[in-house]
Length: 239
Image 1 (cartoon, helix red, strand yellow):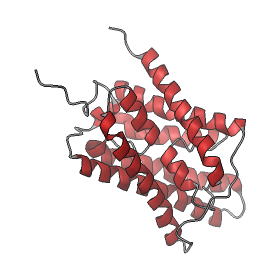
Image 2 (cartoon, rainbow, N blue to C red):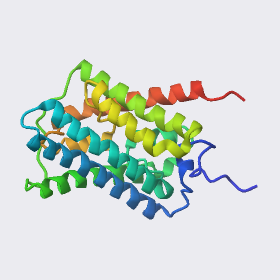
Image 3 (cartoon, rainbow, N blue to C red):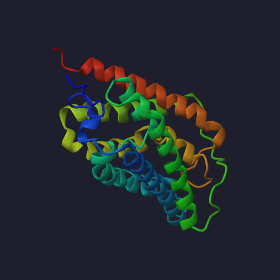
């Protein structure tokens, strides 16, 4: 009997949103391009929002939130058929751990996501007349913020896993909406993505994070992703 194509994933898995039959170089390019556009939106809208908000932090955060949620809907819709639209090492790692994505391709996806994300920061900086990259200096540290990142990533990954099972057609909107909500209900404003966090460690603008604070955020994100995988397993229908 032919071996099943693990890129298809089990029924209801996130990779089932697309055929995932594109060659690996094409899928890696899609992940890099999507990550670039995502971070360019996050960082760029943060710069624009801060410049226009007149010192109103809440208004600036709102101006950063809405474009981020919107671009996620667009990017997941466009790129899911090609690469699965992970754009997030935590999502890729969870899918691989659950047997829904080939472990041999994780490194290529994560590298593309990180390079793409950093490119997004560079593009945003150049659009607004800033140096291409800068060492982030916006301190974001402490148990409350780490818990916020755990919760944000838990929510995102649970939405990806459960949403793909119960409402796969709605995944782009579910992802965009959960990040939009988590910007406001989590203490950390919902980075929820190791590649994006690294890229935001290379800007001193509104969306930035001190580079030294990135490892703790990433650790919290991976913990949240692992907990979401456990929760999804507990919620899965029993056969």
